[in-house]
Length: 80
Image (cartoon, rainbow, N blue to C red; front, side):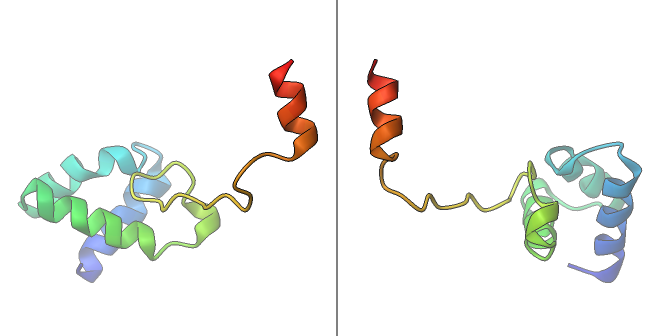
């Protein structure tokens, strides 16, 4: 990813015109690159952002659950 591509994505996100799900076609058109390259660039860019800013982004890594199952109290109330 180039500095120009990073700056483009930063401006795109800040402008509110598109979330990062829609950034790929914008990046393809702006830099004349294929979809796979644009996707990888967007994912790399998202990975570089602080975790708190990544909610809802296309490439955000899912958070791991800290418990394998819900606490007993919740499991019982869900069964009723």
